[in-house]
Image 1 (cartoon, rainbow, N blue to C red):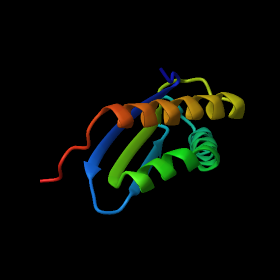
Image 2: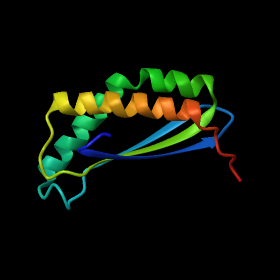
Image 3: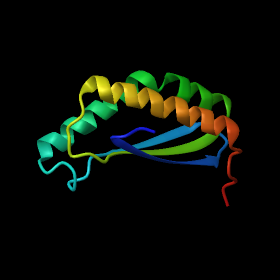
Length: 106
């Protein structure tokens, strides 16, 4: 779906909408810290610019959403690829959240 990124998420019932995002670039794929930091900056910026609809969705459907996005490629992605994939990830996530009922927090 979102290669070169791996996405995991968890949705829990909550009184107020809340989104937590974890953006990672493992040393396994990017050996140099400069490259890992660049990937995280790209991910952070593309999430910031494209997360409005997901934030509105969570605000209208109160739940706690935890998202993890991780790079799983040795090749450094460009900003255009990162932004395109982030749009895909966020829209697919919103679609899945519409289909799937929220799990109860025990």
